[in-house]
Length: 384
Image (tube, rainbow, N blue to C red; front, side):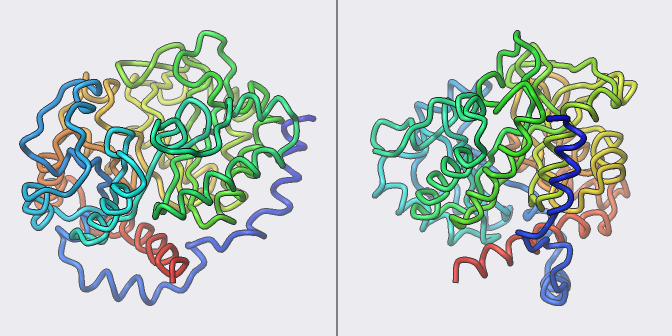
């Protein structure tokens, strides 16, 4: 099927199955915003891993985190979060032991300052923190590529609805899935079979069906990694990666899936740390590019909801920027949620300092916090 025709069909049914927070009543949000201090607001813009709240833990590679097995809130974390509220927490496999521990841990997290939402990467296939955990007996899926190869979006729905059902049962709010990348590069080492297809006409209905499956199970999905990690050869977990495509080329490929997700009403879009020099004219990562986030995603594509960064603890960011530079740079570029700073206290204080010195304005912070509170209110209402 022609990609343009496919997108046109999707746009005809845009937003018929989703209540966009942009169209929700704003009274509650404005009332909440007026009661918040600057520190309260900045905290809402950070979603962290548990280890970020334990300032006794120092790490330089992801492999160093697993042995800590941080699986409960300790006194250090409780002390830190009193002064540094958080908007959300993301759990990884090593933060989870079994169902009883997970239930207790989530109950503890719910009490933290900032009333955090609970997030996880549970795509199905290789990236599945729970389904691939030895102490959980959950349905497993070979890959999203295998689902894409069936050609039937109903299979993507079934996969996501199954995942969403057990995530809801365990107490999660947000799943950082599905992958909306179009895997066009056979040498891609990080996306590969995580994508539904190398054909955007196949991938787009899979993405929207997956989002619907999560929604119907009570979970908010997130499409990733904008503007598309599928035509790269390097892994942004460890260093620099780039796509040499022009924007016109992306519009014919990568943007087909992202525009479909936007038309459906997706609440969250996660950025990629890839450089796009033929779009931006620079080597800065898309996560920190106002051209990509403001001009393209918000301006040209008309996206109104939350932009969340990929983890800024990844090498593509940490090899070039400090925690402070990355946190401020992402927000300045247009991101609403900064995910997983390696040093949370430093990143938080940098944003506060940026507002105080005029690098960022409080109005700019308010723009993001409004979007975040709308989503949080919607999720809390869903849980009642």
